[in-house]
Each structure stands twice: as C-alpha cells, then as structure tokens.
Image 1 (tube, rainbow, N blue to C red):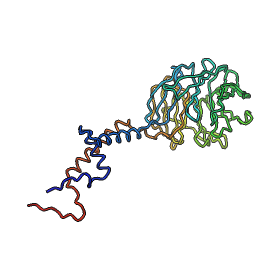
Image 2: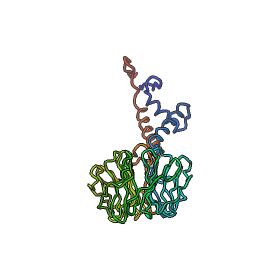
Image 3: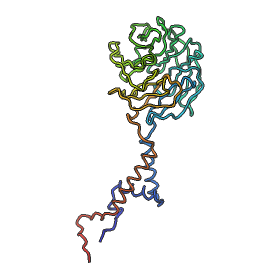
Image 4: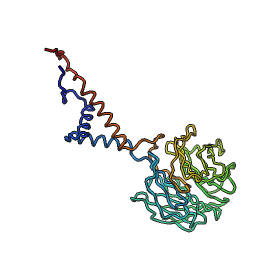
Length: 352
C-alpha cells in the first residue's frame, strides 16, 4: 500500500508553492494557487527588472533611441532634435542633455516624463557637438567646434557662465568622475586636450588619435576610452600618465563614434556609424558579447545610473516564468508518484 500524501504535515514551503502554482496552471483556482502564481510572476519580473538604459543618439533620424541594457532591445524613441551628436545624463537619471550640431543648441530632456520629452533648449552655441556634465550635474560643458572653445553652463538656470579657450576644433567631451579634469577631443588635430576644471585652463595635449570622437571613463576614472572613427579602433588612455596604453580593434567596429562604460566597468558600448549598430564588449578581454542593431547613424551614448547590466542578457520574464513552471510541474508530478515519507517512528505497512 502507499501512504496518503499528507499536505499540511509533509510538505515544506517550496513544495506548497509548487503545488499551488500547478493547481493554478491546470485551472484549480484556490486562494493559495493565486498567491503562488503571483509569486512566480513577481519572481520572473524581478529577474527581468529593467537594467540601466542606454540613450543612443540617432543622428540621421534626429532622435535618441532608448535601449534596455538588460536585454539590449530598443524600448522607446525620443524625437525633436537637430543634427544630434553627443548626449550626457545627470547622476540622478532625471535629465538628458543632447548637443545639436544642426542649430547650435543643447536640448534638455526630462526623463521622469512618460514618455521622456524635451522640456527646454539652450541656444547660442557655434557647432555644438559635445556635451558633458560634472558629477553633481550642476555644470554642463558644451564643445563649440565652430568657435574653438568650450562653453560652461550652469544647469540651475541654463545660463552660460564662462568659456574655455586655447582649443582647436573641440568636439566631444568627458569629465573625470572626481570632476577635476575635462577631456576634449579635437577631430582635425587628432588629439585630446586635458583641462583643469578648477581654473578652466588647458594643461596637457595627448596625441596619437585618428579623428577622435566620443570618449568615456571607467568607474574609477583610471582609464579613458576614446573612439577613433578613421581607423576603427578604441584607444585606451591611462589617465595617471595621460598616455595611450592600448588599442581595441574588433571586426564589428565600423566608423566608431560613441562609447559608454557600464557602472561596473565590465562592459564597453561602442556606437558604429558605418553599420547602424552598437557593439557590446567585455572589458576583461575586449571580446565581443553581442551587437545591438536598429539605429540610424548612431553617435553618442549615455548610460543611465544604476546597477550594472548582466554580461549575458537574460530572457524575457514571461519565458523565465513559464519555463520555471514547466520544470516545477514535471518535478511535482514525479514527487506525487513516490510513496510519501513516513513520519518518524511509523512502521512500514505490509500487504494483506
């Protein structure tokens, strides 16, 4: 004989959740089944919680594509720009600044709106290609390649408070994590200017680039990645010595223009104007993980603050949930065919 399956006394909490989820799956809708179903849905959604978002400038479309980095899919498009090039996001993840080369302006996007939208435009620049923010988001730097200077803007009222001179063809910008240094690429000279932000003066010039475009720091600020559009490489600069220490070359690079680094420093994103795609690489060995298609002449990339995305994107939550339920269903059916465990001290039943 078989022992009866004593549900209250012989099942642990995981057994109960499995059984109730199975009951819901086959239509036995008890309150416990509903609760178990909700639990599995919550677990699936938690596993697929949206990762940090990439804001990729689509130059040809005069738009910015929003990419969920947890699965590398485009989820939204922000429009209304004019020849956009580089973008920058504040540390709170609430404002996105986009440089418009087409009309000499910077668009201010409110990311708290649904959908995000342009709420202000800062005008009066000459060839505004690059933008960068300090760590607090209080100061915005704008590259004016047409005037050979960088404008300094207070984000509290979007007013220009000063300029940085002594530059030739300043384009794309990046501020060090500690806010002490501003790096500015010069397309025509193939160089990188180092600016001391305490007095806004150029203190060094780094050479050896080939039509450098966008640039991005790793989290510690020890490394700076610079896109070389002309030779399809990414230069790695040691900011301690301000020298190029390595060059990353990957077959997926084709006119690279934009770069961004994940908050963990483990992932490098590279926008490729030539293929309308973004390459995703592991910085541990500079190997390609995947590519994200669907852009229209991508330029700058801004990465929202938040936890680092998974190195290998996970499947959508509904796939995880259904797969989990199928496995649990099979596991529960197997358990139901086994004799129930006897309580301690219970004698084995004998036939007859």
